Image (cartoon, rainbow, N blue to C red; front, side):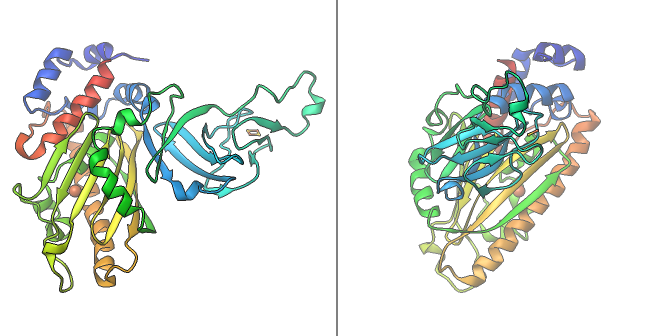
Amino acid sequence: MVALAEIRSLYDLPSDGEIAGRLAAGETLPVEFYFAPEVHALEQEKIFSRSWQYACHESVVAKPGDYAVARAGDTPILVTRGEDGELHGLVNVCRHRLHSIAQENGRAKNLQCPYHGWVYELDGRLKAAPRSKREPGFDCSGISLAPVAVETWDQWVFVNPDPAAPSLESLTSDIRERTDALNAELRTYEFQVRYEYTMECNWKIWAENALECYHCPILHRNSYGKSYATDPERYHVDSGENTIWHDAPIRWLPTEGDLSSLQGFRFAYTFPSSFFAMDDYVGFVGSVQPLAPERCFAYVDMYVRPGADETVVKEWLKMWDQTLIEDKQATDIQQIGYRSRRVPAGRLMLDSESPLSAFMTLAFKALSS
Ligand code: FES
Ligand SMILES: [Fe+2]
C-alpha cells in the first residue's frame, strides 16, 4: 500500500502540516486527492475498510433466515438474521473460489453459494460442500465466511468491515440527541422506491455536495431550493466529531397548508458515507460508495409518511429525484475541473460551507494516520 508520504512525492503535494493548515483556512484538499488512484486505494484501507456504514433497514432482516446484501467500500457484505434472532455481519464472498453468496436480499434456512453449491449456516459457518467426502482431509469445521462488525442504530443496520471496530456508538454519540426523535418518527414511514445514481466523479465531490446547501438556491432553484428555505438565516448546518446535521423549514407546498405547523427538513450524515433525512411528508436513507478514483455510486431509499397528502408526496418524490440528478450533473462537471489540475485546490465559503471543512479534515486525518 502506498502511504500518504509517497503520494505526496509522486504528485508533488504540500507537507501534511501545510495541507492541514490550508484546510483550516478554508481551502479544499489538493485536487490530486480527487483523482489519484493511490488515494483511492489508501481510502479503501484507511477509511472504508474500518468505518461504520449503513447496510439496510432492520425490517429487511426482521425474521430468522432473512438476509440483506450491502457494500462497505470494496467489501461485499451480507447481513443475516440467525435462527437465534441474532444479527450476523459477514463478508459476502465464498471461501471456495470467492463468488458472492447472494446477489440480492432474501430469506433461506441456509446460505448456498450459487457457483458450486457450498452451503453455509446463517452465522457463516460452512455446513456442507458437494463432493467433499471425496477430498481426503477436507473438514467443514473451521471454514466460515469472514465476519464483519454489525450493529443497529434505531432502525438502521450498520456494518464495519473491521470485526474489532469500536462500537457504532463511538460514531453516533454526538448526534443521537437529534436523531432519536427523527428516527422514531421516520420509523413509521413506509418504503416507497430506491433511487440510484452513478456519478463520474470522486465520491468526496458527491459527499461534499451533499454536505452544503450554498448551492441550493442556484443549482436547485426549481427543486430542493423551491421547497425548502435555503437562506443562511433559516438553513442550519452543524458538525459533530464524525457527523453532520442540517435542518431547514419547508417554504412552499404544492397544496394549501399551514407552513408554520410543519417540522421541516432534517438531515444527518455520518462519516464517511451514510445519511438519512426526513420532512413531514417523505424521508430517505442512503449511502455513497466509491467505485473507482473518478466514479461513485449512490442510492437513496425513499420513505413516505402514511396518510400524508398525496399531492405533496408525489411532488416531493419527483423533487428529490430532480435534485439528485442536478447534483450528479454538477459533480460530474466538477470532476473535469479537478482532473485538469489547473487549479490546485478549491476555496470554501466557510460561513456557508463549514461542514465541508469538517468532512475534509476527517478524510485527511484518516489518510495521514
Ligand atoms: S465459489 Fe462458492 S461454491 Fe465455488
Ligand atoms: Fe444538491
